[in-house]
Image 1 (cartoon, rainbow, N blue to C red):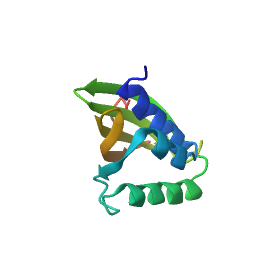
Image 2: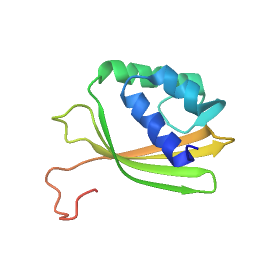
Image 3: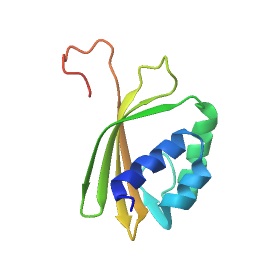
Length: 123
């Protein structure tokens, strides 16, 4: 049986692969709410925005660096690049699951800095 962590990662991987409708049909509750400040908070608005982003960045890459799961909530920490030459950003997606489906979602990101003085890096 697929864990919520596995579902969250698979959801993001399908989104990046341009399989937005399949990702939503498989992993998302029709009652999804999200907290991205750039779009209305319903599932269809998020799906539309993800499709538009996919059209603008068809070569997007996601590399999952870390996941955590606790009490129906999942955190996925990733390196997301718009294409192979993009330095990218560190992104955290937070998901709340109910009965095996994503019912709530948050995302926060920070661009990577090629000139960062921190020798530990973002990951």
